[in-house]
Image 1: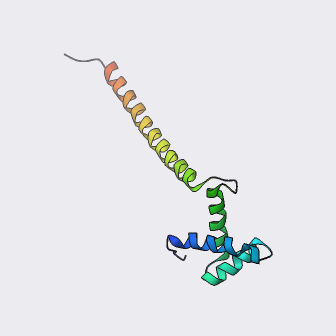
Image 2 (image 1 turned 45 degrees about the vertical axis):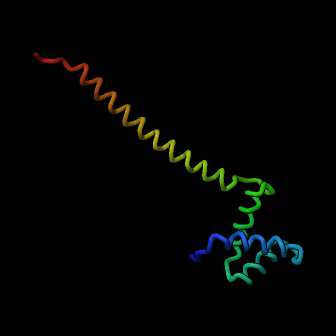
Image 3 (image 1 turned 60 degrees about the vertical axis):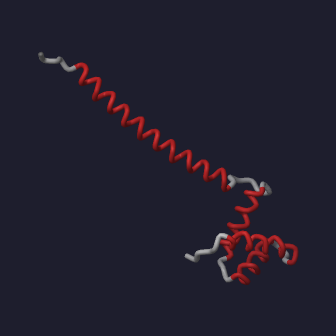
Length: 103
């Protein structure tokens, strides 16, 4: 798997946007730019679509929203685990309270 710099997706997407009008369809523009940059066309297509979603010109979940959803899912799982621990502890302590004490 190729690793790209943080600037690479932004630059590649900009190149596709700038050259779209020179090609009969988006796929041709993607192939052209991917060839120039020596990268996979599908990777470039995903970057372009992600940029369009983030810009609001294509429907979908934005990068920021996806990150927030991921964070909330982690937090939810953590809270569920804590809740299970608290339930187990309350059962344990309830049994301890019900046990007769010897003096």
